[in-house]
Length: 337
Ligand code: UD1
Image (cartoon, rainbow, N blue to C red; front, side, top):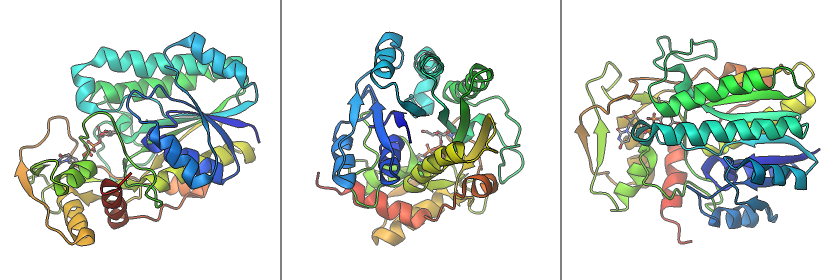
């Protein structure tokens, strides 16, 4: 087994994946410029696995620094690329920042992978690449429609860059399209710990319950759904981490793995915003202060995954539902460390 380079290994999904990789026998190094992550995640990784990984505080946009990392580790066989900016609203405000960071960083990384004869590449993509999906559940064959935000466009463009750049090389790549990642590691030593303000539903709920926010605003309750609020597919971060290890093992061990393939990573069940709040209230035993507000511009009404392909090819069977997500997120929000 070669060494695995994880970009964004100190971040939310990256750190959980690093743990899962180590637990599956991989040697891992990380490249993370800590722009939206905190070094304490490295301690969390060490406390869970007993292994201290090296993080290079390098910006992927700096090609020379990145090349240096690859030259220090000529035995990198696989790369898992998480490092990117991911706030939809911020991307509307600062599109150039998003294109510069997410696209330039990827181009440099792809360049280094080709130069260094990396064999396997896994990309952290998003269901946002599908745009507005007409037929649910969403399969990998759903058409790629115009993205709703510059952030979504960076994911679409990145997928194209990966496809074109590796075409005439030996690199095999997998695009993993996440639905709504949430929850924390079962050890309570890792979880979402961003430097920027949390805007996603689950951290907004936990911050409200902690009194850090006055209330949670539900963005609309008059949509054509079970209870009028938006439907999403919340996927536990530990299930997501497991999918990355399985995707890597698939590329390494299965001759039938294609040059490029994509997989939807969601549990396959739609949960409304109001149901998510009820699940939180149930597992914590405390009422949440929420109110109904206007719809958020750019929000899709409903999206959830068909993950049959990931189950069939990768052997991925996500098991953790919304209650387990809320339970772990709440425990993490109340941590003492
Ligand atoms: C979006 C992106 C996703 C991206 C993620 C990263 C789309 C379709 N999805 O997910 O690709 O990876 O951001 O940040 O662009 N909600 C409230 N009140 C709140 C916050 C959210 O009601 O305070 C609702 C939203 O309307 C939505 C659901 O909760 O229905 C989830 O929202 P959020 O957690 O922000 O994620 P998405 O917008 O689905």
